Amino acid sequence: MPIGDAREMSRSEERQVVVASTVGTLFEWYDFFIYGSLAVFMSAVVFPPDNPTASLLAALGALTAGFVVRPLGAIVFG
Image 1: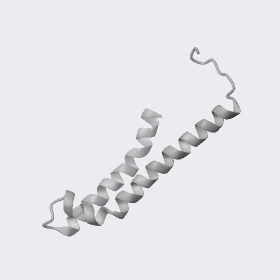
Image 2: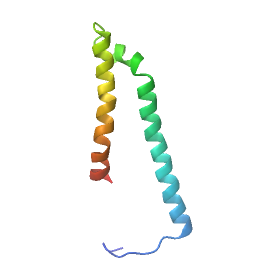
Image 3: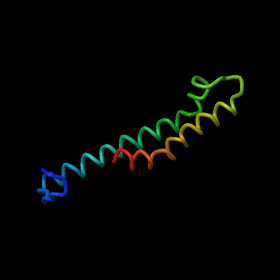
């Protein structure tokens, strides 16, 4: 199909797009939820354990970076 040539989607194609995007969004938010829930435990493993406060802030900073960069990824790859 040439670029700019629009065609109407069938009902099943439209449903497939909606289901695929919903499942992808659910997986993405589940990933953020799991990381945020386990940040306390992962901070001691991933970051230096000598300062627990700094390790937790670094883990939460990584989560924040994911939220900040997310719209940029949607623009570039979407």
